[in-house]
Length: 157
Image (cartoon, rainbow, N blue to C red; front, side):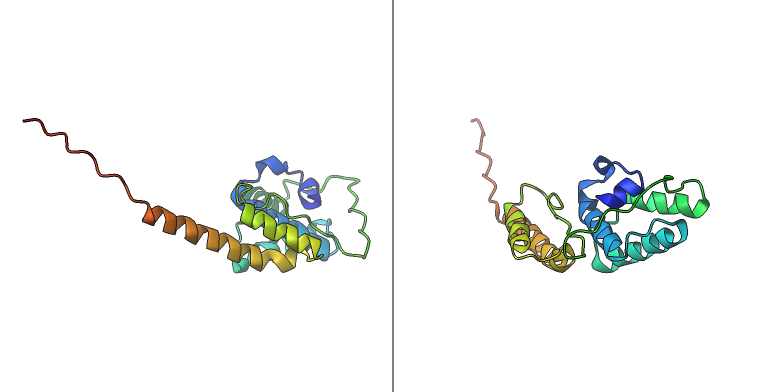
């Protein structure tokens, strides 16, 4: 993810639950023309934080930390950093692989189908949230329906 590279954040430092937010940040960053100057970058990061809250998506804490460091002036964009080259068709496509639990084959199939149809990450975000909610509801229902085996009566006479 180019935004994380700009912010000098190791992708491994992003918790699993915040990967969707990181992908959203990166996608929106490309849509906003990859701002890298301090003032536009701070404005963008603040706006994307609000967007994640509205979308109810986890915002990556390292990105929030970098925003606060930018505001205090303790971190700066690395000198000589160049924005990524535009992709064919003029818009950046973000492959949303790894944004959900890899064990969730259902979500992965949904992502792959959307990618085959050329749907952007921004467009599939609501669908991914719906799928994740459905999977969570199913898991809760399964746990409620599990019948525990009654303990055998071990009384001795």
